[in-house]
Image (cartoon, rainbow, N blue to C red):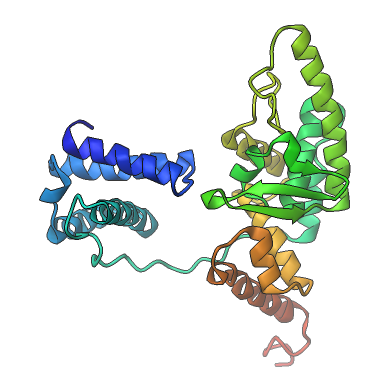
Length: 309
């Protein structure tokens, strides 16, 4: 986008990247949502935008049949953009601040039970670089509850096998130290050997310099991307005959849920997941209650009111 609006959008995106540590995926989403608003409503400068314009845009998105979550994301992007402009002195107010968000249905995060997790991580047969790497990815995602972006961003010196821990850079580039289980440590050790052999082979061909410090690599010696890691997880989920929709985030949810079911303190889970707010972690208490109720309904002899009728 050109003109004043385009310049300020670029400044906002730089701010989100450098000051807030926003991921490339988040930055693309912000650029898409904000840019489409200005293009659709023919505004050339942000100060032209008023409260009714934002409200009309949100109403228009809803009228087209977009999901409430998509409409809410668009409004969130506009709020963040105009909040930045207001704070930096480009505007005297935030026209998106008081626009009501569509009410979203509360969805409990999906998770796998323990047997399903074991079935998933046991799919890769570790007999080559790719399979050994994939095994390590699956084990680490479940063992430590990493986001896929955090996993892809790991460097060699972030892995401490002796201490059984990984140093993770989360949202806002906040660092945390996360423990790693014994099975994941074994998988990581096997992968480190395969990684070394790959790098040596590529070096002999004059290749593989791009991913020098990256921990997880592709077959060309380059850092593995978020998208590739997602494909790896979904691919093995299909092979394990699990229900559709299994992703790296499913393993993160499973990690948190299983810890809670085992009696872990919610504050500890918050630290391990890298949540800035405890309220974000508390959704797992609702999920666990739903799980317990399901177990009760299936197992308790008096759960079925019609059992003796």
